Length: 504
Image 1: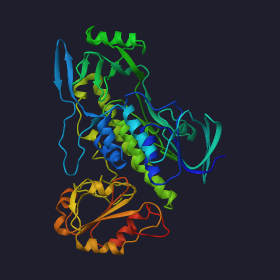
Image 2 (image 1 turned 120 degrees about the horizontal axis):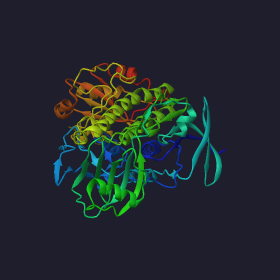
Image 3 (image 1 turned 30 degrees about the vertical axis):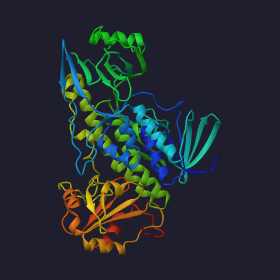
Image 4 (image 1 turned 120 degrees about the vertical axis):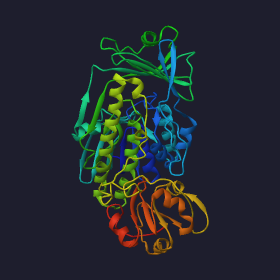
């Protein structure tokens, strides 16, 4: 038996790696295992939405992702001899509250590698060729049996997190139903290919009747394209270069030649949602909790945001916060996944009937408006108000603090702490009476005088003195306009350790 750790993460895809980064920077003792030989090598999920970019910014990963990405190009719809340009994703200008407004195009193997490198910078690592075979749990934690290069070993952990994909061993062992459908007759090849001579300034699409289509999307920082090709019921799912080249010829003619297939898979509509996200000391994130169609760029993003929601809560409970805080993970994230699954499924259904119309992307895919209003940590929030309130994403805003220093809220939020924004003299003065636990996530304060609060007031929709507490995952915990200490006690009872208070 090895020494007991805090968290065992099973699976080193984007969700598992993001969770590991968040836990590692919080000083949580963890191990990350993955059954694969090495990191993922395919492009599969290639869209990083604006909200996920904000998460990656906080984790110290966004700059590298940006360096390996591009904005989405125009579609090039091949209709007979013509190639018709088509706007798939409208490009937006950065604003004060949304500094990262556009979806980034980046191959998943680049995203995975960037998050993995960040984990290594933080002192963590991934144990590849290490497979979870079974686990047992009781009230005190989990004992997992794994097979790896060192043979069969047992790992004792307080918590186990399954980030091990749609076929999750963690989920199956926990007896959690994976509700949904798999359509074995509907198949699509998704592959990374080299196609010499094909212009790289368009996402090429060949729409056909009867729900058939083919698309070739240029992957940044490489000479590859991602191929998505809908198979007919009688087509063989042959992933060899010769077979893929032959299918491409059927759609586009012999003028296109697939010179190399770097990675390939066959995707079937497997649209499912876990009935529960928690079983005692066991949790699910990412594809282990929900699987999506490869349309709309939602699956990877939802998984990374699962991890971002769960990470700080695990760390807080390990530091002494009430265990019931961990129940809020499912309560907040499962409705989001259900909504996003509906969006992805709708886009995929339209791909079958109207591929060009389905290619249009709107604001909802960016995931900036997803919120936890009415949830267990924002129960008193008003669904009707247009202002930023408890449960909402905390937007960026510029300000001058009481020392005359300029700043931006996103810079203040960056890190493993809570952030308390005080606007106006009464709210600032009340900070001296705020106490904070000596364990768990620290509290950072931002003190803004009335005369320099225009940006925060405009973005957040506040009038008069106010305190806004922002959770470590960038969502508003509460907004107070008086009774500062009483509001803190009321709204943080579930989130903070109870022993020893401090203010940093």
